[in-house]
Image (tube, rainbow over all chains, first blue to last red; front, side):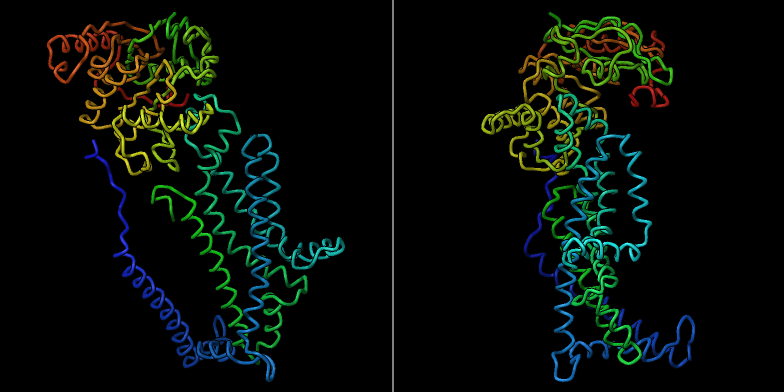
Length: 293
Length: 267
């Protein structure tokens, strides 16, 4: 009998090292390519006096090396280098984003569970959830900060709420889709065991939805970082990347590299969030390999 | 008491299609009954009505003397579909364990039963595999083990081997007969395949399409236990011919029966 067994592919340690090396090489090649495109465009743009879509000069496109250099430059005379500040701002914004992400993901998930239980509720509530995302976040953010502030909520928590506002939506929509996705026969099987609504939910619908949930979490992970950065601006909350962006914007013509350095840190923060979800997915999901994106 | 007792069952779908009309059928305990007929004859629908997965528009169904719904709630039957319908996130052992968990069996009792079932379907050693690591035939054996894990007296099977290749199918046919004899359960088996129906069954129910009706009953008096040699006996061929003629008489276009799949699949 065992002759027809399809053995799972053995992942030997022997193969792991070259694979890691290949990945690292790919990463380096990718970064080198980006560097090449940036510097190449810059070189051509300056020589050709390009003005469309923007004028290419040292302000609009500083050398990558200048941006790199900016990380080590002190922000104030005799102060610590920029990277020291960026690190603390990133931690601050990361904290907001993480709290917002967890809050938003939990709200989104339980909202989807509630919606999955009744078509009537779904029809009634879903349009408003969609509408919630068409409202500009920049308009809501000050209201949230001021509104919660009068209740004595510390500003960074308000920013987390704004991040949650961006996070919950993809989670709710995707989880709902996942919860409704079991095959008719999988549902019939549960029915044949006379399983009730809750058993069907926890033993069939939720596990079936997990790949969808993780797809949503990947989107939300980066969205929560963006939400936190955007949330800081109208909140005039100092100490995070959002405030730094506003600040460096004002000095852009003098020190463009500072803003670029901050942008890079924002991107890295988003990537860290994204990768954390990828790792979590690998640990949690026990599915056929084709279910991993 | 009959294992299954069907009286005057009809089923009409909302679209106005009559899937089943006036079905009467009794299945005795320990019987192996196959339902055979062209696509659209409502055989899968009838199986689902026995399992109370869909309600008849008219008539009554009793399983072990209880109304179908009560029987379902009392876990009187196990079911196997054409697809194995295994849960991807559970191992083989955990899949078999699913109905036992829903029945609140203790862990030690569950583990003992899982071991027995794996032995029964000859999959010992695969308990920690996940479904996608198994071949189609192995998946279907897990599905059978799951259906039988809580020892229901009735096994409902909806074209369980329909998606498998001929060789795997014949081997699983033989294995299923062994399991049937070992467990002594009653089996109602839906199939498209005439040789499969004859080889497995003690009785074949031939159905006609549009509306689905019982067109004939054929006693299969091939001696037990049946082996691959059974398939070569002249009497086997006589019975196959008999079923084929009944199907033809019932108006089934033999060979391919192309249908808009809506009738029984959309139930």
